[in-house]
Length: 465
Image (cartoon, rainbow, N blue to C red; front, top):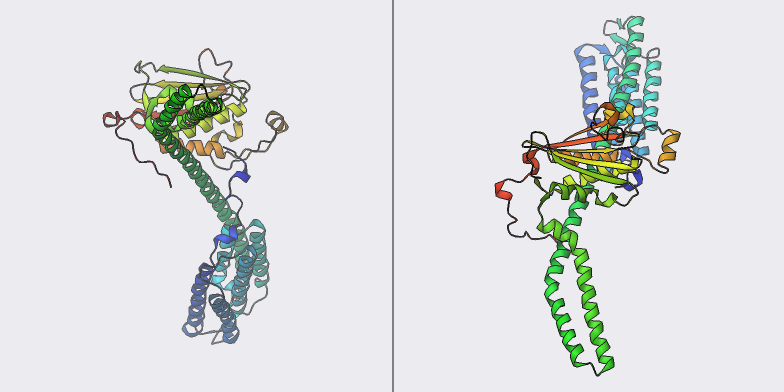
């Protein structure tokens, strides 16, 4: 599987298109209700003198913006980057104007300016997040010095000491930066994981479709075998009767040859289909060789080493041929072949309770600084000059290993990554097996079919559509 971003159609989509306009409208209605309640309580409950006219103008602007959005755009409208940016700029500006009218940073509700920042960091690009965050910091700094003070009906001015007000400003600035970085980091990781899981599902769906298609071809080959044999038999009889008629004899030979050709084509096309449809189970060695088959002719030597463990049984287990196992192991073998110098070793050990497969190569191994993150999606290391020499044109993101790890873990496997130099390889080949080590192990019952699954049973219908 290609590991470039171009091969994944969902990577790099505009983040802002994830936001529905209705979501921001609903949040703004909630903010408007809160602002109206806060102003009413402050003015009528605590007898604070407020410029109600300007306060209601600011809230009215938000109401008008919401009504225009509701009646102008459809309910399923999703915002572009520019539209989402302008919407959040309006919300920050409207909130800061209200805070200016109600005491500046003496108003504890100034903390609500963090809400638009969190939305921008989660759903917009880095540039838009910086714009929203910078605007909020600038306006909060102005509000620390310029504001309409809160006055009681007795004429007393309610204000915090300057040291507390400046401390509140610093806290808001730090909160803006911290929340933006934190929200964006979490959002990026969730996005990467979502994209990688979708890639995994696509890979497994592709594998399943190929299996189903092969089954259809196998069934067609089986059904067409009898009529093709009949055509060949009849053409042979015609050839015997038309020996003295040259032109007709050539036509009969052509019919026989074309029947043979159809038989050979269907046989070659149906081989994989027959394997997948009729061999639900296979020896462990066969499954490993099937997984490694696409990489056998790539100039690297693949060695197989299968033996029972010290406490295991001598007979090789027959396991269920799961698409997840084959595709996951195939990705691991591909990675080993890609980065090996000349050799890749696939070692299998089995016992009464576990089955273990180890894939080792003689390359440079995993980068030590990334070893703890192997298996994470879209993991990119800084390229060294030697990397481009060893593997020109390759842009690795760790997606192949993530897909392999995810598919194998779905079957109950435990997957670990290490380097041969860390003591993971022992025995006579330790000096040669110097590269990466991938260890995959299952509880035996996860791969070996139970007694109720020992027979093939009736063939299941093959989905064609």
